[in-house]
Length: 534
Image 1 (tube, one colour):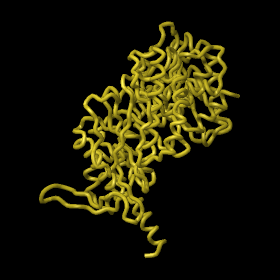
Image 2 (cartoon, rainbow, N blue to C red):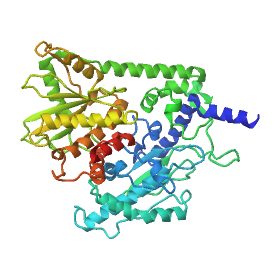
Image 3 (cartoon, helix red, strand yellow):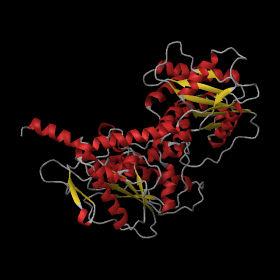
Image 4 (cartoon, rainbow, N blue to C red):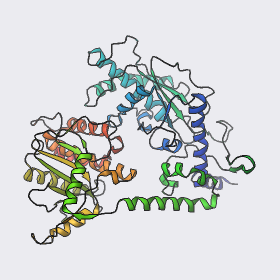
């Protein structure tokens, strides 16, 4: 077989759905071995988003959120990113006595940079920032002379030279974290990473009550390094069934098989895979794509059924609006966000002096025209709560219209609700295309002839997880723009404070700390910066 034919065969095997799912199952068995046999289920299992979720069954793993991006650990690009601070995870780790953090990597690497470098950097930076705060007497725990701030890296993976370069940046990152608006955890023990991969011969020795909180980084995938015989023993078959009915199914192993599922998964996502794992793994190769398509279609049908629109009398609508405000999260005493449950509970409530509530329902629109009006007021009686339907273009494909839409919303709110941030509170919530269609239709009917009928206002709880994440990514930049435009909506902004990149970043970091899965795309942040700085 010539080189071109080999390359084609290898590419086909790497992107084959059958090979991917069986490789994931093989790597998941290693994770289960580590958790159950090595540590006797002492530690919770947490998936590092997004690839790690393929190797962690929701039925047996933690729902805690972790996102340590490999990019922050790439050589010469090391970083402690405040947009991915993971600070709530530090307190959670101490509460649980540590955990296993699972991820994988593709061909040619022993561990992903997210585990081998990003996590160790994070541990050391958080430890240093907490130590500084404790030294100033701002924490409840007593100062510990033995508080460990060292950088622990896997020596066989990260060179001494690279370690020294990273160490030279740690204090700088700790200063940035300590001076940010993010809430530092009140840790009683420092964080310390450990490292496990399929070639690890035995687990690290960790006492029952160690002087640190262990974060055990588990790389699930085998190391495959060319055809020279080096690397880990590679699984080649999946055992199905037991006893007389047992059989094995051969496959070509793909390291880091859970990565880039949009290229091979046909819409299949980790939660659906784990729910139907037995049937997926027992299905023959040529029948597997059809089964996956059916499962994905059934899941989409269920989601659509849950998202149907209900039209009711205005009285029903009012109670729904009240429920929406009750369910939303208070970002400040005058600003609420309907973005799903935050990663840490909010201790804030609407202040008692609020006499008016304004709800903004945000609807993403794909193709705005040059004459598009982005702000639509829902027709209500004078005594009813105001509702605005705000159509938001894509910041990536329609940047000018995105900025124009922000301007229209801010101008409308300033003109019609001058007491925002004082006597008037604001709620931002994801809306539905049907709401935009309805309000446009209502606007064509003469006042006094409009029917007394309006849609209910469902909260974000009706959204599927992927749709909720998309809503968070869309709404967080909008919240940043509003908190900078209306200082009264923020917890700590003064009325005369100049808006600069530091102020914008501080608002963003505090929001992402609540909803880390909503870390917004760069295009939206760029447009928000342009809007606020212009």
